[in-house]
Structures are given as C-alpha cells and as structure tokens.
Amino acid sequence: MIVENSRAELMQSGLNLIGQALSIFDSDLRLAVANRQYQAMFDFPDALTRPGTFFEDTVRFLALRGEYGPDEDPDEAVRLRVDQARTFQPHYLERLRPNGRWISVEGAPLSQGGWVAVYTDITEAKQQETLLRARSEELSGQVLENAERLAAANRELASTITALQEATRVVTETQARTRQVTEMIPAHIAHIDRDQRYVFSNRQLPQVFPGTRTDILGMTVAELLGPRTYAEVEPHMERALAGRHQVFEITHAESGRRIRIALTPDRSGNGVYILSTDVTAEVEVREALTHASRRELAAKITSGLAHDFGNLLTVILGLQDRLARGALPEAAKADVQATLAATRRGVQLLERIGQIAAPRGTAREPVRLAALLRDLCALARPTLGDSVTLHLESDLPDEPLLLDPGHLQDSLLNLILNARDALGPPGGDITLSARAAPPWLELELTDTGPGFTAEALARATEPFFSTKPGQGSGLGLAMVFDQAKLAGGTLHVGNRSDRPGAKVRLRLPLRPVRPQMILLVEDDDSLREMLREMLIRLGHSVIESASLAEARGLTDLPGLTVILSDLQLGDGLGSDLASADGPPLILMTALPQGDGLRDAAPCPVLSKPFDAATLTETLQQVIHD
Image (cartoon, rainbow, N blue to C red; front, side, top):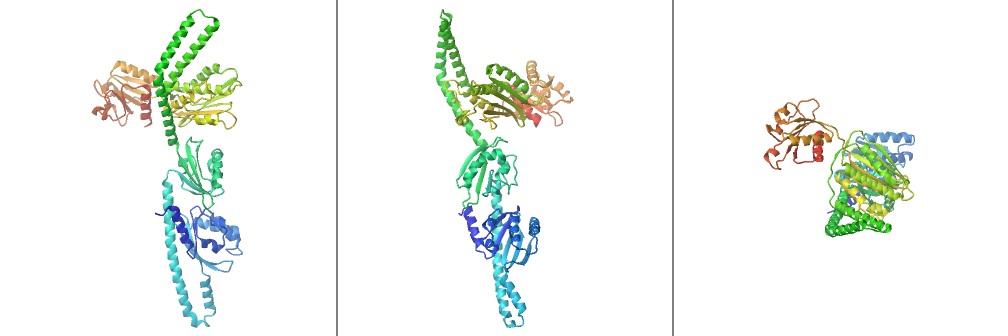
C-alpha cells in the first residue's frame, strides 16, 4: 500500500510528464500545485513555484516583465487580475507573450475553492494559420496536407487535455480528501515556510489554543501565538528550521492547557510541519497516578510504622512528662521542653502523613471570601516577622461563594509560610491576590524572594520533597495540590516574569451561591428542624410544611424557587408535587437504589442521610438546569 507522501510524489511526477503547464491556486489565492512546465514556460524563480506562493506576487512578477503588454500599468494589471481571481469564472483566452510565443490559457474553478489553470504553447499552430492566410493561393496544394497535420495535432491536444482533466480530478479529490481527514483530527496540523509563515492549516488551532482563529494562512507564528507563548516556542522553532526534529510541551498561559508540539523539518528545506495536541487530560491523569502511587506509598509507610512509632512517642512523652515534674536544673528543664516539642511535632507529622495518604472530603458552604482572606492575613501577619510584609489584593464579587473554608485557609496559610521561609532573614514582600475569572476563582501568591529552582519547579508537589533538608516535612505543597484537585481545581507553581520571585496560582471552580426560597416538606419534626437549619446555614430562605396537603397550598407562593420534599409523607407521595409549571422538585428518601418507588421519581433524589455539600450540589444542579 502506497503511503500518502509516496502518492504525492507519484502524482507530482505524473504532472511533470504532461506537456502543458499547470497550476492550482486555493481559495486563499495561494499556490497549491504546479508542474515543472509551469516554471519552464514562464521562467519563474524557485520562490514563485513553491506551495503557498501568493497569486498577487506571481501576477506582479509577470506584469513587471511586460507579460500583459508594454503599455499596461503593472499595478493596475495586478489589481485587476487579483479582483478577477477572487470571483473566479471559467475562461479560455489566447495571448501573445513578450518573447513572441503564443499561449492559450484555460481556467476552471474547483468545488473545494480555488481554481486550476492549464497553459498550452500554440505558437506552431498560430504560425501555420498565419502562413496559410499569407500564402493561401501559392500553397493551395499543401492545404490538405497541413490541414491533416493540424487535425492530428488537435487530436493529440484533445487527448492530452483529457488526460490532464483526469489528473486534475484526481488532484482535486485527493486534496479534498486530505483536507477532510486532517480537519477531523483533534489536533492542529500545519506547515510553515522558512519565514515562519503559515502556508497550510487544518483549521483546528482553536481546539488546541482557545481564543485563536482558524483563518491563519499568511500569518506568522509570532503574530498568532502572541509574545508570551511564542517566547517558549521560538527556540524549538529555530532548531526545527535548522533541520532538527523537536518534541516539547508548553502550558498555554491564557487557558492553562498543556500542549504537546512536534516539529518536523520539511525534507525539501521549505519550512516545518507542525503537530500540536492538547494533552491536558493526559498530564492530569499522569500526575494523579503519580500522586496516587506516592499516597499509596505513604499509606503503606504509615500502616507499617504508625503502631511502633506511636508507641515510641507515647513512651517518650511519658518519660519527659515525668522528668518535667521533677526537680531539675533550669538548663535540664529547657532540654525537656525542647524534647517534648520535638515529640509533639513527630505526632503532627504522623497525622499529616495519614492525611496525604487518604485526603478528607470537601465540606463546601457559602463563604464571603473577601472577609475570609482579610481574617487569614490578620492571622498570618504576626507569624511573618517584622521584615516580611503581607499585602492583600482582592477583586471579588460581593455574593458568597461555595467553598470549603477549612481547606482553603489551610492551603493559603501553607503557601504564605512557604513564601516567608523562601524570603529568609532579609525579608521582603508577599502578595496574595484574588479575583473571579469565570469559570475559575483565581488565588495567586507572589513573593520577592529568589524564586523556585529548576528542580523545585519539577518536583514541588511531590510528597516528601523539600528544599529545606532537616527542617520541612515536604508535605505542604503536596497537600495543597491534593486539596485543589479534590475541589476540582488546579495548582500551578512557577516564577515571576517581571522580577525575581516565586508565583503560585491556585484555581478553584467559581460557584456563586444565589439564595433560594425553598419549600421544605417533611413530616418528621426533628428531621425537618435539622434540614431547616442546614438550609438557612447555606444562605437560603425556608418555608416549612409537615404534610402533602399543606404543601400543595404553598407551591404557588411568589418567589418560590425549589421544593425539597420527603418521598414518602404521611398523607401521600412527595413526587405528587412535581409540576411542569411549578418550581423544580428534589426528593429525599432512605429507600435503596433500585427500589421501584424511588426509580419512578420524576426528579433528582437525595439518599438519606446526606451532608450540606451533597444538598448544595443537588440544589445547584436543579437551579441551573
């Protein structure tokens, strides 16, 4: 089976055997295909026969050489022919070239856009016609012979045209098939010339780099990607243009996606082929597997050592406590207290290993984040010392957000203390900024310290990796990473671009809490009271009902947005409250999955018991639906 590039070479060889000149320009007025006779007939330089050449450049070259007549204005000739090409119509014409030879030009549009043009040298036929006219009387005896020769030439020409038409059809179908296949691939495939200008694209760039455009032919890589992304790509692009294959990954700053880029030098030396793929999911899975394996290792370590380590710490604590109660010199008492502090730190370390081995779940609740961040900074400042200044920059909405405040405070405090340690004795500035960037809540911590080393950037979130041997546990950033993933967010560790210093960006899903008016229907008084308190704690207004009959009279209250009802009430089924015109319904039940009554419910069903996070998620789901 012939591979695609072999087919292309085979086709090009076939086109080169045709006696006529042929060119195909695409819908962007750029050269797609040309045979050797095309260059030979018009004596084009190599630059004008390469795929991607602009039609305007070709016409200007011919106009300046006088191809369209000595008296015609070259600029006007270019403008006229480019305008005609944009609204291309089938045509046939004959014209005399400056070198004294006659050519016929036959053009036809292609269904995929663009057109094919065939150029035939008809000088000999024209000379025969002129000779026949000038010597019609003298050559009357030769008319029949020349006519036969001309007829034979015409038949040969017709045969060639037929073959050329078939070749054109094959080229057109192959081009259309190739474009269709490449546009179905979930990756961006492109070709750039030596000036890094796009000459081919499968129009999939926005699927890989969100926010970019599809019509990129003629643009440079730098123009398209912007200075920040291009700065990462440029060194690899230069090496590829020098003939070296390149495969590398970058993080697209605007979208946070991880992109793998493969650069393959064009064997003819005319540029580089590009394959760009979004590997964000692959990287996340890879990181998750890595962290999972490390957590598994931590769990095994904890399981194997926790018992003996706990017993050892208990013995040490008991002995030191006994010593502390005895009559000891002041220096010995200080040693005892230091030993007790170290032992308690060992207990904390054991607990933290257990946490990273099996992270706790989230407990989301409505949080006024601006106030939480102010309180956090007030809490953290006394621990930073006089040489460190903590700044808070907040651009957050006034409405509460659905977050796990405990996880968030732990994560941010961990980052602040890490930044303090990185600043060291000289001190410096730490800045915590927060903003809403839908669909994300972005929290960014920067400092004016030395920044992360290359090794720290590569291993920052690995459990047990620390840049402070003998001091840190190496679990801080790993725990922040795990908590971010658990909340559906991301953690990005890097260095500042404007000055020395580290930059850590925490992204969490932006979930604004919009208070609802909820009709709560529950015939168990104690359970109804507990649910009412849970809903009020989440920021909602609650109307209560203890029966189905009472609830039916409340479903048309103005402003009512959700009904939360037990499935089985004392006087009927809560599912009877479902209405196409009424508020959305959520049912609660202790019936197991697969129960017929539960499966017949026309709305979401919560399994009792449930927590505030599960209730909030279900409320958000029905409200947005």
